[in-house]
Figure 1 (cartoon, rainbow, N blue to C red):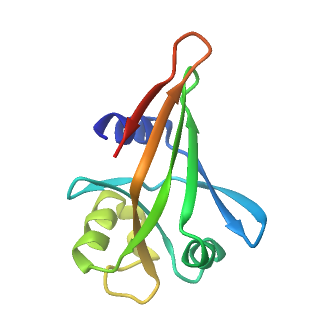
Figure 2: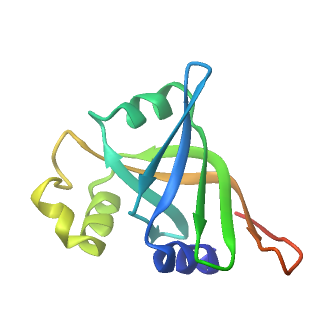
Amino acid sequence: MQEVYDFLKKAGTYYLATLEGSQPRVRPFGTVDLFEGKLYIQTGKIKEVSKQIAKNPLAELCAFDGERWLRVSGKLVRDDRVEAKKHMLDAYPNLQAMYSPTDDNTEVLYFENATAVFSSFTAEPVTIKF
């Protein structure tokens, strides 16, 4: 999982896909964290993406570093603990003007039963499950 985290940090931006009914929705994200052995992302509960995940927690993200791409798919699970939110926000101090570990908006979610696939045009895909 460390390799997945490192790739996403290096890429800077990844794209998260969710479903709104039967319509796929994709948007850029930049927050990623490792906390207690789980891969986390962050958003705001007031955003449509949060509402989509609440209705259907299956999601996939994709990132590209210029040579390889990574897809991570699985179930996103909300973690309402202040400790998890604080860990994420400590990693992204620029977000602390908009989010707080104790507000009613900050949402952190981790991947459960995830599959990560590293791919390129020159090598066989590498799959990691976590």
